[in-house]
Amino acid sequence: MQGETGPSAKPLITGGGAEKDMTRRSRTKPVQIGNLMIGGGAPIVVQSMTNTDTRDVKATLAQIDSLARAGCELVRVAVPDESAAA
Image 1 (cartoon, rainbow, N blue to C red):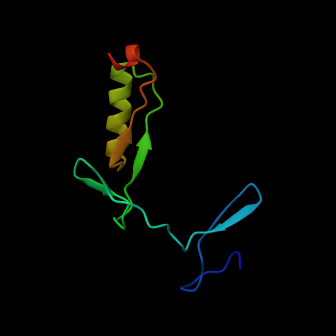
Image 2 (cartoon, rainbow, N blue to C red):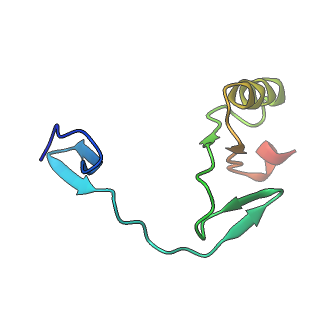
């Protein structure tokens, strides 16, 4: 029942008119990235992705630093082409 609280309450995601029961999690393969383990029953890792143009190195590094200070454990950076990787 929506709005129910307490130990028997099931967490729900709502949006777009759909509700999804989050009590079941799929079994996944563990993947190690640096010293972090993702999947395979490992604790949830707080992660985000930058939205800066990676050619602007100063802005990208500032955003990564800001995310890290906010508690982000893993930051993903998209590099759309070779010039953005230079």
